[in-house]
Amino acid sequence: MKYKIVRLLDGDGTWNEFENDWRAQCETHQENFDDYASGAFSVVRDLVVAEEENAGVFAFNVDGRHTSFCQLNRAALPGYDSPVLRARHLTHCPDLDFGDHPIEAYIECLASAFGGILAASDHRPGFLSKHINLHLRSPTDRQFFKMLGKGLNEEDEFESVQTRGSWLYVTKA
Image (cartoon, rainbow, N blue to C red):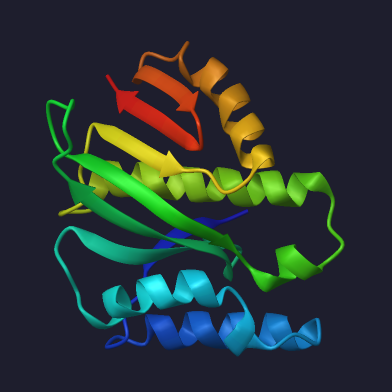
């Protein structure tokens, strides 16, 4: 499987490609795209239009399909020695929401999003960060990342991986 992270912008066609994909997914399930995830879309629309240096909307693709998106922003936060990359409004695709898929498909979606967020923190100017905070959307997300954190805490690449409340806190070594 091929994984990819894409910054969504209005001016370069990436937003239109994303929207067309999710519209088609909604139609497959007889759902209205304009009603789908309207809360998350209302928050990220301005970031799709304005290309800010430290804030943006990113989609995660698996085999060419947009499986999820989130807002990323990097900011100085109290209690940290360097800027923190925050991932918020993680939203999964209509096909995953409305389709009848095994739990492995949801896990794959979470893993690809997490991998994309890590990649952004390592390689995308304006988003480079040692610290990552990911807002978790469900108890299943929390359980998945708590288990993932146990394995990642044993890796030399990570200083700390913890879940507290509805957040995953990652500090890279």
